[in-house]
Image 1 (tube, rainbow, N blue to C red):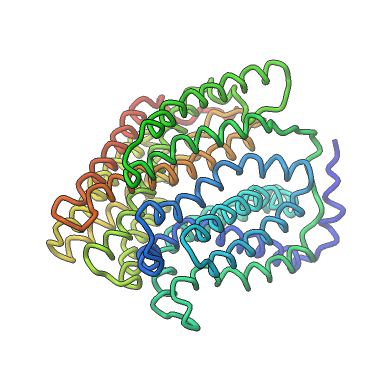
Image 2: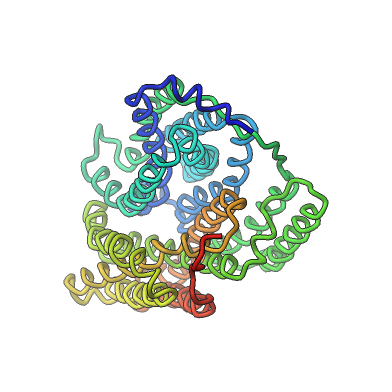
Length: 474
């Protein structure tokens, strides 16, 4: 079927297409930065509100959880109602939620605004890739999509640095609120440009939405995360354990429902046949565990540096620079270039580096032995993260049939975001359980949780097939 989009795109000048692309990148940066920027601000927020540790965790995890749970739904809604409409609505909602975050007067208000912000981000983010396909011809997309990866990676690792600088600069006396309110003028400008320049487009395929599956999946994640975050703070109750027991049962019901609906041709939450491919299934499990480990590490590192060592938000942000440099080295010069020739051993090496030196960095927070110990640990931990995260998505998708590429990519992003939320819940809970007053041994439970997750990643990486990439493109 001929695409209805080219005639609209041809009416745009090259300058207008470039501005439209820039608008998409601005939205991408806003969405990714807000996952990590809040880590630097959390101790200041906790002090300002007198919030409990679990509330601080939910400020970070609430965004990632809402984003992950609604991401697949956002993609389906874009197909049905138009990518430009969902993008504009998502940016507008994200901007409004950012304003609510900056104006919050209590931890509860801030958590609710962060959940709303994550939900709006889930409506906005899937449309970026779809609109790039609409705006550019196949050969043009190669460079544009390459920049998406670079900009996305930089945004993730620069979030804590930007947060530290903003809190230190304290523009207009806003303090931590500036990390949210800075989104407002940027978001308003993005909405105006998107309204004027983005072409109207939607999928030519009719796709339904499995509302029941989406709701059941969200309920299973809530049943898992709530007791992990609140159990220690409230004193473990029998119903906390009941929720944890119910979570895998509900996930099994989601799996069974999806398999059954796929056989009848009904709308499904995901394509179940993807999990019949071993490399995809194992790779996705690595993405979940690695996302949890790295999300938990970044959370505890930013929190512990300030609460246990007394670093300022700016100093904590600047501490992320060697880590960021290591990530870029791992992505650009090691992970992507070596994975085709050395296969799963690149992932094994990256996971091992991250495990060793993330633990070494947190051990520095525990002992405060020397500032110079932390810098190489951070750089090497970042290198390990880049070596793993850089090639992991291509590895997961290597043997996936092209007809499932869009669904598979959305599923990967969902799992990565869920991993971040789980990591903050699991590792953060371990940290707060051991560090109520910052006594000796406080960080050890968090280190143990991270190393346990990394061990799971290693076991799964060894199980990946060889070679990782088929000799002939299917």
